Length: 198
Image: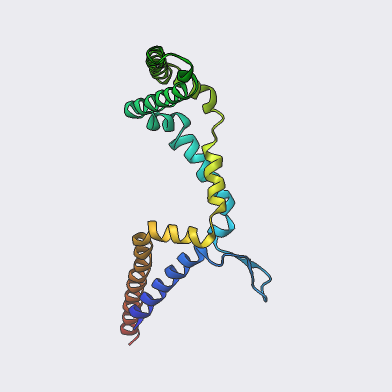
């Protein structure tokens, strides 16, 4: 009986400990003791959000990383094409009606080629300088911190449970296994002591 009781106690205490990471969401007063109880994550939500934001900004992801990811050679080509198309459209709408047809085509073609070339040059040469100048103003950590603080506590619990479901279940089962082993040891000690006394 002792191993089964130990397994049940071990499983339940680990189950309860995991629950107490998240619950209660809001401070709960224990009347007799006068102390307050709140889940670890709800109580430290602001500090956790600030820490996660800081780690992301300082160690995981910089403004340069985002620019590098966004401005691949294919993306640079797409940006140049989009800018060129936009300029061509404006020229056709604003300038071409006032020029003879042949001249309008030549002007539009010349300006389009110039815009494409200069856009490509800018993206290749000047973009790094622009990122260096403005990259310091991008505060990814603060944005992540703000988003995490805005999350509902139930959403945070759901995220953690989805991401770590297997590990949390393993912790619960490990508590049961350890409780069972301790129960076996207790039973062994009791049997040993009974035989020694008789």
